Length: 159
Image (cartoon, rainbow, N blue to C red):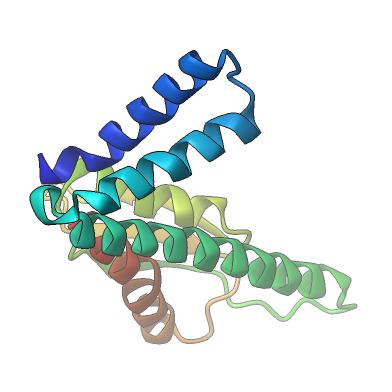
């Protein structure tokens, strides 16, 4: 039951929409917040603290991705505006700590959606992700940033 709280929360929000007769986004968000409060009331029975910690981790992951998206887009913009592009493109191998299919897929997609990087392939044993970078002056630093950034946050949010 503890791992299904998000689904319960969503179903309660949809039930709120059905009761009120409005499935507009503001009403569903309000229903979701009401459902969250209801789950808080019975928190000792359903493991609410863990649910809230994981929910907060997901929000932090989304905000960190959006911030990295802005930073990477700015970096790529500055690269394209330079009269001389002094780039060090390369393919780096990122050893993976994440093991579940959805975690690997999420990490690969977050990397691909970030301007200047592209997830190319994953090894047969699913322990290494190959990433093309438009500019990678220090491959070890780039690997460290991915592992301590997106990968760590994915593990915190989904484990």
